[in-house]
Structure formats: C-alpha cells, structure tokens
Length: 411
Image (cartoon, rainbow, N blue to C red):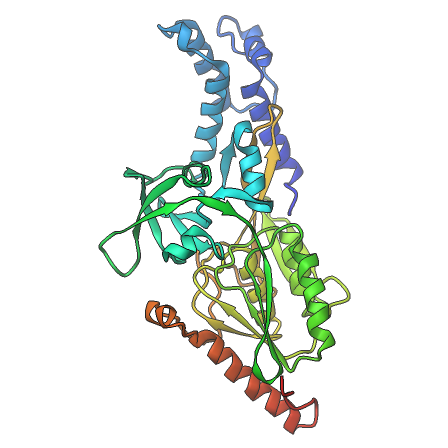
C-alpha cells in the first residue's frame, strides 16, 4: 500500500501524540500565562490550541470528575477528527479491535460472511463470501443494511457495523435489508459460522476456455493466483475469463502483481496524494499470461482493487470488460498504528487508470453491459459468463483465421 507523505505523517503524528499524551497535555494546557501557552509546539495551529484548552476546562471544571477518563477523552477526540473528514473509508480502530480487523482481512473468523462498504450513511454489501451464511441465505451484492437486530445502523461507523455482524459460531443475527429498486425491506435471520477465505478458484469451460475467479486480494492471493495460473498456462488455454465480480479489493501490491500477469510492461495505475504528488505503479516483470485472449467480468460488487485490475486491462486494451458498472471506490487506504496500539485508517491518495480515468464515486464502465438478474441467479443462469464465452470464441476464431494463433482446443 502507499506510504503517506512526510507532511501528512508529521501532521497526524503531532496531533495524535499531543492528544494521547497526558504528560504533554498537562504541560501544554495551562491557560494561566502566556509563558505556559508557549510550551505548545510551534507547528500547532491556533485551532488545535483550543482543543487543548477545552481539555483543560473539562478536566478542571466538569462536575462529576469520577467519570473523567483520559483514554475515553482521547479516543473521542480522535473519532471526532476522523468523522469530520466525512470519508467513509477513513476510520479509527481501537486497540481492542486490531485482531478482528486482521482476521477479517487475512484469516479465518466467525460471523456471517459479508464484505461491506459505507455509502450515503448505510453499510452496503459489496459481496457475500462464498459458501458463507450470508450467501446461503440469499444476501446479494448491492443490498443495503438498514437494521441489525432491530437497531438502525444509519451513520454507524463501518467498524462498529462489522463488529455487530461478527460473533461466535452458532449465534443468530437478524438483518433488515433494502434491495434496490425494491422499497420494501427484506428480513434475514442468519446463524453465524466460521468464515474461511478461499480467494482463487479455477474451472475449465468448453472449447479450451478457462474461468478464473478472484474473490479478494489478500496477502497471499498473488502467490495463490500465480500457482494456479502456471497450471492453467501449461494446458495452453484458448482463452481466459478473469472473474472479479463481488471482489471488494484488498492489498494494492497484490493487486498490481495480479494485473502484471497479463501485461508486458507500462503502468497498472498511478495515484495522486493530498500534496499532488503522483506515484506510478508499474507492471512487474515476468507475466505468465501476456498474450492469451482475455475477458474480465465485473459488477456493482467489484470495488477498489478489482477496479484497479479491470481498469488497467481495459485502458491498456488488453481485455474486454463485461458486466455492470463497478462500485466506484477509487482510493488508496493505509492504516497507521498509534502509540497505544490503536490505529487510524486513512484515505491517502486517489488512484487513476493508466489513461487518467479517476474511478472514485464513478466506477468502471464495462465495454459490454450485461446484467445478471435475480431471476437469472434463481434459475442458475449466468448471462455474463455466456457473453464472455461468446466474445472469446469470436476473438479466438478471428485470430486463428488470420493465421496468428491456434484454433480452439476440444477441452
């Protein structure tokens, strides 16, 4: 992931160190003399001096001093700071939840198995995890969670929502969901279970076409993907479908490595940070599938890293993108650990496809729009894969007819 700019690092380190350090506060917060005020760091803005002053007034004058807790006051200040950014992808994560976040991103945990992102004040399901209680119950990408166990989750911080849906295996949870364009809420009662992440899955289709799906970009997904891709390429496939539907993203270095398997050189993406500094993310050498005919599948559940991959392959004219408009999370997010073991996760940059397209709040527009309706899912139909096969067969046949490649194999 991207590192923050030096200026941003100094700014947050200064603010959070002063807020979290009781000794610094006691030395700096006196209102009695200008000399004591001068003990504040020179870089401290006038606005943040008033934060310190407010802290002293609370400590000095609040009626019920037994309720005052410096840790809670500090956490409240940090939460307020992050909330003022009005960015659903920036959040404060207490020390007590660090392990939960790590498990959710990288390992096995207990819950219902949904990936969510906040949009317009509500958690939106980006994807149900394969074979999870959420998928088995029929929860779909794009579902909007409005209540959990009868309590509204409007404007509830994303990490708090995640904490609500997680829980011991065997316990029950009730979700009230809106499924656009329907206006009547749906109610689901689910039993939590152990959630195991399998990120790469490969299937041989007819006529030498291989279907590879990636559910998210975990720390080991690139290695898992390359191992399976080696086996696929050893069979000399006629064409390939890279399925990124309902993939909510993940680690950017892993994303770049996956995209690099299909590109020879050049850019995968570039990002621009808050200081206007541009960072180029270039193709890694040694891609295993640089020439095989390729189609990429996306839908509204394709977010962040999956938008990077599909946007790069589309912009570089390496693959046709088929499906529906993606989610539109075009930002780089980085977690920074604080001195007490808590962390802040911040949007540090906005990314752009190699052609300059910024995806934030817009998404990737497929080359060929094909929807998969609820009726299709219920009937076991997948018109998006069907269209991908059609497009690949046409490309394979054209290449073979031009004498530039081989005709489709029998299987």
